[in-house]
Amino acid sequence: MTMNLDIARRILDAALAKSLELKLKPLAFAVLDTRGCMVAFAAQDGTSLLRGEVARGKAYGALALGIGSRAIFKRAQEQAFFVDAVNSLAQGAIIPVPGGVLIRDSAGALVGAVGISGDTSDNDEICAQAGIAAVDLTPDVG
Image (tube, rainbow, N blue to C red; front, side):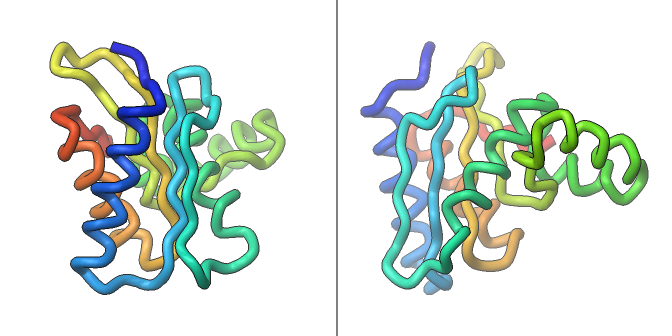
């Protein structure tokens, strides 16, 4: 399976619905394909200026390292020099905090990643997982 606009929009819609259900702060949502290209993006009214870049950076980091941004966050705490060096290679594009979730199909193949930013990192991640699960794909935060 490959990421396409229809799937990406359904992920965004479900993630947005989850954020509204939880009454979160305004969020920015980015869905990337396996190449790291943006397939869909949305930002709620009231998001701050760089919120979209942060959302993309969470998803991009997950793709770049093959692990969810929560795992990158943990690795940054344990091996700060490594994550800093990788982020230098990525020209600062990796945001190493929770909210970037890999998307896998039923066979475990990588489909893309979702990045969300605007509320707490934990809440951002909850919305990403909800969006992915709503389209019968598997969220991978590890």
